[in-house]
Length: 427
Ligand code: HOZ
Image 1: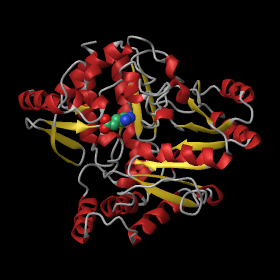
Image 2 (image 1 turned 135 degrees about the horizontal axis):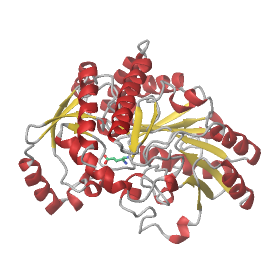
Image 3 (image 1 turned 180 degrees about the horizontal axis):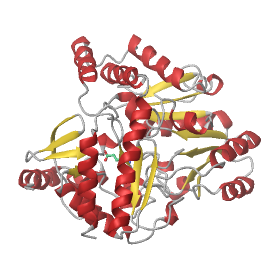
């Protein structure tokens, strides 16, 4: 494949944008090649600046569950743009989307729209602190909740990919309020809570960890956290930015039957436009300004284009059987990938929940961040490069999940499995 134009653009971009990218992982640094620059996308495919087409499992890191450029979503955005791109004033569209969110998540009695997942988690944490009057928070090693100071401690995603899980620039004095625990280890969390009794405002987690690959919660883990939080007056914040409307219409909370006090959303609810949201019990949400004193604001919050894209997307997700079809496609793909790996004698752990999945290049299943064997990044890099050359676009890091869309055809999935068969031979 010829990547000349992408390489030229990358060289240019590096002169004016740090690392040539506006979000670190997309620089492809950990997979040992230059990034492809994207020109267009449609359905399950993206096309790069050189005209190469790829079956896409990044899906803008999760939002594109309908595939790229779904006509109904495009039409909704076009119509909204004609009405005005932004007003900085309330609109009916915000109420419609808020209602749709509330319908899917019964524990969300009130919701506030923001412009990114980072804003959602950072605001939810401020609210939890304001509501409980406590300063400490507890998060999990390898979970990523955006790039706010208190959350860039032992973080996943790019922070893990580049080996800097705790970012410079986060004051130690600030980080000391962030306690970290091992994902899926309820007993360790209980011990930490006991050691900090009465001081923890919230426990925040990804109900399925998608920023250290794809790690499902062990049976009883989420339920145990719910019970613990109730007993200790701690708010449980379920970060469904990635899993919301992804693993079920009602997200991981519907799938696992555990409800958070506060919920963070993003990605799919914006249909590909910049959006985030956080919501929860009325009693907590009404501590937010202007009803209460906890301040949170945003010029582009509830942006009409983003709201319209979100409404169009969620409307389509309600179609009967939508999530069954996503599940079938994902099962088919992961089964095929696992079988080919076995046939090639490559040890892998294929991990999947609903339409999100990842391949770890090790025989042992991953339950937490420390389970990922050192050295697998390099093997993943080789696999990634071979897949890209065969026309398959995966997330460029071992620590990221892949995303299925409804637009992926059986032919796409078969081509992906065939590409993997070829790639395994290079490892
Ligand atoms: N934090 C995102 C992955 N979990 C990466 C976003 C991006 O590079 O666009």
